[in-house]
Image (cartoon, rainbow, N blue to C red; front, side):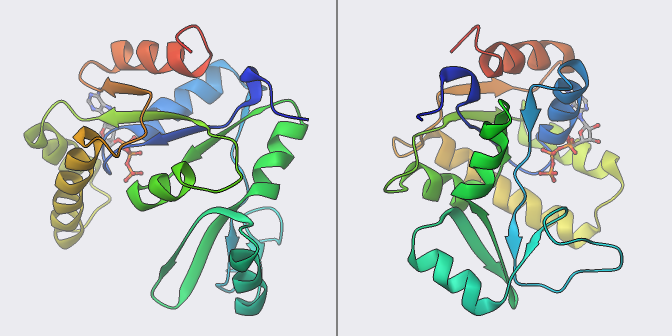
Length: 196
Ligand SMILES: Nc1ncnc2c1ncn2[C@@H]1O[C@H](COP(=O)(O)OP(=O)(O)OP(=O)(O)O)[C@@H](O)[C@H]1O
């Protein structure tokens, strides 16, 4: 059965520090039963306490590559020696529960999802910082990132912002996260469908 509008997956993207987690946390609090995150696949080993099928689907490199060949991932990437991916089956697991799957993914993943040969096109939301200066302040204010990481994230943010402006970008809606309450209301209107 094709997903109805209410369970059609939603992709949220935007530079690191744009406020994706902040907005999604609020959304999940306001609508505790309406959304879900898919469980990703990874070839890395489980860390203490991680359970297969909960934090990740832990698979071998062969299993992972087999799923890549069969176009079973809407997006996947390799970092260092470990691969990660979002499978169509994992998204369907969320939809089967009558929930909307939210995919929080970076730019290369967004391109892959938009160009997938069979996966029904999700709705794309891009969260933008008000300016690069403010983004830098927020990344510094988060105090979780090392200086080298902050500089890497800022460089990558420039690339993501350029992509968002390009004709190739699939975004259906761009929300500028200046005032958090206003940005949340705008994102929510798009996500829960009033603005669909
Ligand atoms: N509108 C806002 N005004 C001020 N600060 C904000 C606003 N939105 C988010 N922040 C702060 O900016 C920082 C970055 O936000 P957040 O961690 O949600 O970004 P993110 O897009 O999820 O980043 P990542 O992709 O790295 O996970 C956080 O410290 C958050 O509290």
